[in-house]
Length: 302
Image (cartoon, rainbow, N blue to C red; front, top):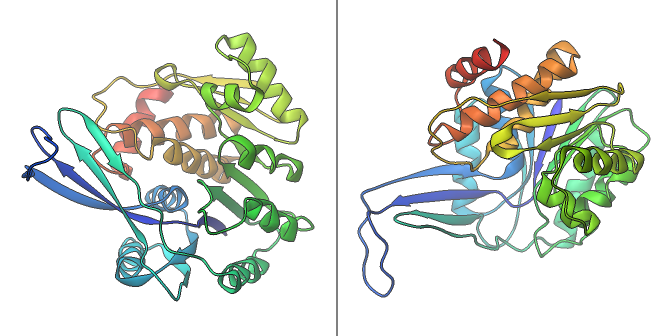
């Protein structure tokens, strides 16, 4: 089983306007909403690829009800801990002449509620995969991911960490199966300017020395490169199409790579499927659907 963890899920409310003017009442031209959160995004793309997962995390209030209901409607198993207080956050995405976002803090997580999450991870077994994705809410400790991985360290589990800065670095000692930093994030981790292919190779090697088994480095419009534990380097380009939104593209790439490796055990194919999923989401108004993923994958594989 694949488990994804989203500590602070959201409803992303997207509003479209011709122009946004502060200080007055603005009228939208259209709006839509999506269930948000990096781990949830991974579960959604896995579902499109025919792979079951269980989404873990916290929900609260009427917005938490909507998140859980939405996942059930997509056929995704949601096993969230219900918080006593607050509501799951609503993030506002303004699409106008300029794009703006308002991301909310989310509900307070009490210590006993977090302990329930730790106990829940005891059900993860040898051969399972856990995806730790996104930032840590202010109401839990900075070492939250480490505490989870410490609890799992004696099990044969694939660990995927999609996080940044110290949050990622501090997880490397648990030898994660996959991490996916981009050039900017690598630069921040090592306080160095990482630009060239040779520099990317050097610092990806450092991340592997620190414990990462496989490192995907996103190159934006140039595709992605995988430094794999089999000693090989794999690279893939991107498909050209109209980009509607990059939100969720990185999560989609993670899901595609997991699915590709789960199905074939082949790093090259896993990277291609991951890239296809990331591209397909960028070409979609929300997360990519299977038809779009298949369309993009065929172009990448040819």
